[in-house]
Image (cartoon, rainbow, N blue to C red; front, side, top):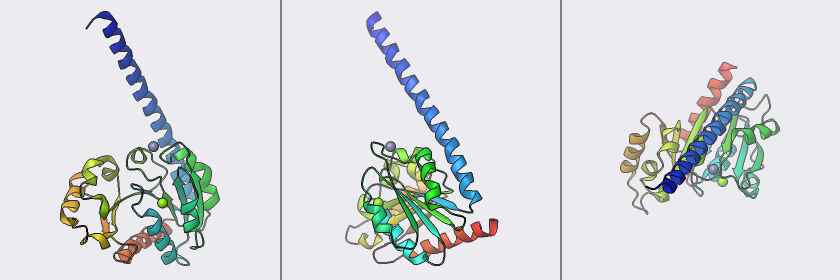
Length: 237
Ligand code: MG
Ligand code: ZN
């Protein structure tokens, strides 16, 4: 390596060190705001769930069915993140919950700061559960806490059994992992056992649910899980 090459190698090194430092700063600032969101929600007796998945996994359909099923029983609110359009918020309107779309523009994930600006629009003292539908993306949403108590990562059958080992952080950090579109298991020759093993190798403690929002299979277990979360919440406030 000559001097010039060494100089530019050092510069590159400096640049990447600086980049890592900036990223760390952004993330720790995000964690602080996430913690204050969490505390704000707790004061209102509200528990938030952060839904993360690839685009097209069925987050919105699952939320549609969930809101309809819980309407009149548990007061829910929804924040929906997408880069553009309010399509999902419109799909979720009139299901008995307050719904607010968050357009993230050039950003491919929600962050705690952005979420904090919308909390007061959908969460009131009577709100027990807040569903936050993150932008469809398996990578960076994993790094940004929003103030949720539960991380829900979804994986749809058409995506294949090996998604958890390809994108470990988002599965490792999940409290609940939902396999969606299980009505397609047979037609796609999906190897459920292999998928469950993959999940277990990344995250041995997450609660794993299998469901089809379309046929309703597995919905009872999911709703039961939410009723438990909301009941614990009520008891605590
Ligand atoms: Mg959606
Ligand atoms: Zn992103």
